[in-house]
Length: 557
Image (cartoon, rainbow, N blue to C red; front, side):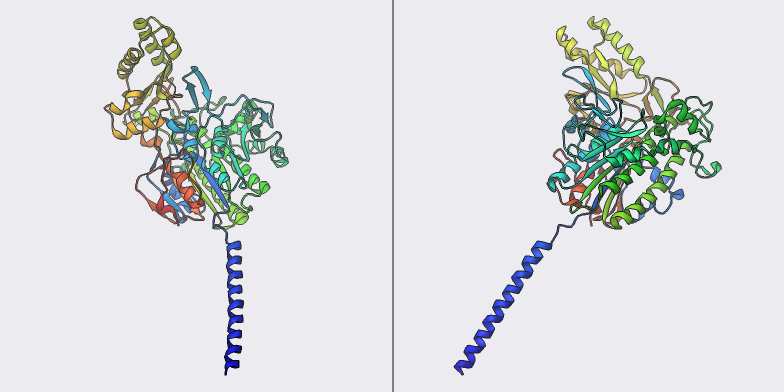
């Protein structure tokens, strides 16, 4: 009996050892093989000057695979607004990707004035780097003026720089600022050569695949086909008649009407003219696909990121305005190209394996004349004339010329050096300027940036002024115009522009689709600064270091 019990105990002991070893081995194997779930690729799409209402203005004419696919299969935050003024391209791209605002990230406009020196600075200007891929100076650019990091930088930090991050856009600022400081590459369009270029900030020589892409001469190919409407012109019922006074003409054309002989425009104006046609978007998307293909984005052991900005919508919008057939046709064409691009991503990366978001850097106002002709208040604010008159008034009072150097970005920039050298009372100069500006037609508020907290203005506008004010790079006085008004050198401007706090400029589309995205919709208030935080939640990484946004929880699966 004892022998039998001893034998049974020995078998049991062996079984326990074997079982324990098996469990430990399995646990170890599980620990080794478990990978943090993340999308293979994130694609960020910023559609320059896309008003939120374009999603639904042309909804009935969109295909099922482009904007509609994102709306119906993805998540739409339909009440997303910009958190600051002025609403401008460079600021928008910076704020989307930093989750921050100009007061923190430092990009105060496409151009801004450095108050310490009084000198103007272009947002991505960098004279310490050289152009790569062209003999022009269009490549003397980098992200060095951006003071905060980006969600793309945070992805690099989270993966110990194993992720690949690439920016692509017609505009340098639309490529460089989203790609961030630690990008592998940013490519933008050079209007002189017709090529995509970069700078020595990223590399000393273009990759062979970029040279090969440029050698296709796609600009000439696209422009040679002419621009006619995608559908019969009488079906564009969401737009004004083709021949009207609200639209700007191409140089050399008698009227801003279809068909547009883009081949002739190419001959007279050079390759840069593609910016003001929908073919600029086509070129950008093809470049994005070439980057995915040749850099093997989405085939990495960690997540990669492609930052794509579509700039031609802005050029077309500025020239023709929101109610032009040219704008409607541009968005119908873009919709078809997005559908094809998403199908490409499905094939190349895998359906459900990538995350894509689409938003805008700002919107655009209706044309002043269009509004007035339809009995809706609007007007043109002649910035140059008012600046000249303001300086004349200040000269009469303080005996010094050009005390205000600029009204750039609807902000009055003081000549600090002159004021200091002449020992003038800066508060008196500001007060005189404010009193003059308040009396101008079309002005709602004029605010001393240092006293905005006590200004008698709506809280929403106050917050956006504060967020947009960077003490080192912004003007000392903020001008807020009446609804429908914008700056122009003409009383009868064509096309449109942007920069204001109003919904037509600040209400932007925001769509998410794919990996980690919970399909649905919200109409609760969300913000441009929430985009980076939402991406950080999807990627399980830290938010950018200047972020003030919060994840849109409803969008997260």
